[in-house]
Image (cartoon, rainbow, N blue to C red):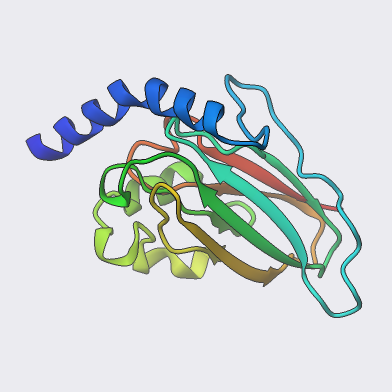
Length: 176
């Protein structure tokens, strides 16, 4: 536990420097800070039967650059998560976990704390999840394709790496 606390402290201390480096060396404007929310661009319509791409980035500041995604009921989505930064996933990994309606993100985050073997996706809660990715470390990309729920509503998504949800790495999929 002391080792985990040290790793977290190190990650938090070096995050501003790494984020600044990622911002200055990247050619895309994918950073988002504070509590500002950013919506996923509507993008081009996917051909019939194909999934629509939704690109997210996860930063060493423990934030997604997109916190709001909108989909039509039953729409097929392909979420692509790019982890920016230089830290390995053991110290600063990111994932995308989409919850079913009414599921508590805090409950899932707490259960994920001891689920390192399954990329911090708690096996005992898989029945409460719609979709999830593997863990991505700095410079890595992971993805998942799924069908949006047929019932209109709001569905939470979060990063279940320990401490990231509490730091604000979360968002909402709105089906309408």
